Length: 168
Image (cartoon, rainbow, N blue to C red; front, top):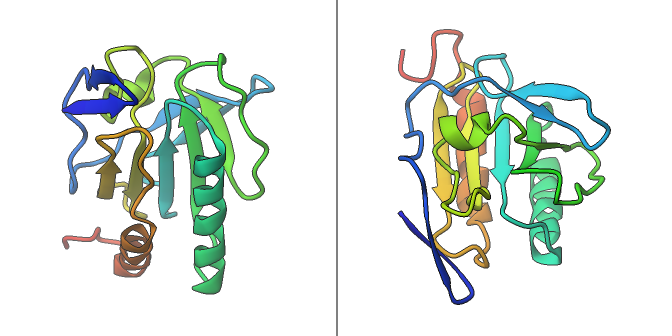
């Protein structure tokens, strides 16, 4: 997949993890050096967002997501912001965990590592049973996510869980 950033053309190093496949558990590191795990089956819907850079536009979208989740009474969702490495300053976001993909596991398993070793701008929704329920990988790093579509998918992922998976 070709990804554009201003006048640069980048490529994903691998195929993205597709909808319906089991997500992988990966360890990330916070700015203070603590490890935390995302992905996989843990009984909670997960919203995983990766970015090549953190700017005001992204932070505004994350706040918009929070507002919409709260308005729709969608609490108890793990929300994580992932960047490739510690050259990025992680923001302090209420109700979000932010981390570095120091082992490159997120970029590799989810297929969002770019040819410049940064992460593509992506949004993954992992259902309570650990399956990738939805993903959006933007072809232009300056584009915003489709928040309304993502919200509808979060609602669906949150309500489909029966303990047997979304397809059972």
